[in-house]
Length: 270
DNA sequence: CTGGATGTTATTGT
DNA sequence: AACAATAACATCCA
Figure 1 (spheres, protein in one colour):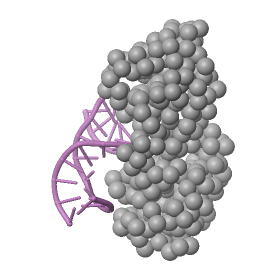
Figure 2 (figure 1 turned 180 degrees about the vertical axis):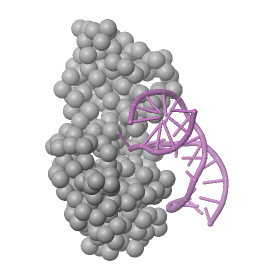
Figure 3 (figure 1 turned 90 degrees about the vertical axis):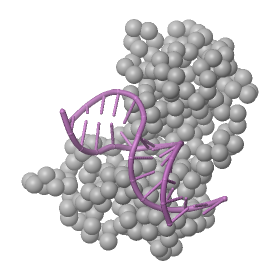
Figure 4 (figure 1 turned 90 degrees about the horizontal axis):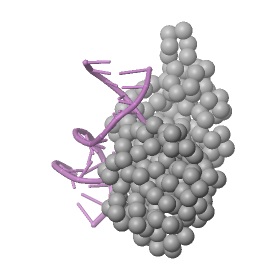
């Protein structure tokens, strides 16, 4: 779930539920999830309140009432947030829990333990150290184009590189390539300026649509390739269970690009 | 039981 | 030094 649109949803959820409540306690079920020593983290957060957020790509930064305490969350492949009241309602896989004064809790849900949470001293310094580029929703065409075309790797692999544009994940990369009608394995350094612009345009429209639909894939436009993934009841299956292109009804191909499962239409993404 | 999963990173090689 | 390719990570679910 957590590509850029989902993380944006988590950010809004946290803002709507968890600001301005004093943190009384922190429960850590598995210290592997922490990027900051548990003692230091607990001490820094104790008595603090969340005051605001900032998302860059798939990273969620949370500001607190202590100016030098900034929390960063990364949701890995399956992370989530859940705000709840009774400790009896503790959600499954809530491996880190913030206990607020007043009895509400915020659970950091980590089914697969690929998620991470910890303090950062400075957001921009952190982003630079992790080579995280401009957020995919904010990057300009002038910034995006050279980031992409200086790579020799497959365009899909370049799109997944968080230093090119932060926040693009596996299904979004496929969707952008589909909307721009570009083969996922086309070397990024062979893209024409028109193709780069089409990808950049698709990035904005797809991400904005996904956020608007709260990342509920079934609600996405019928013209989106994402319906070919088995995540919702696909309207594009024929009698032979083939996945069909929304544009020309040809059979969607599934290949590996850079080790990642990739869906594309061999006809319109020649 | 097996294989694959929406992400990142360490490692190795170019 | 920068880039590229691949495996590994831990767990769940179909």
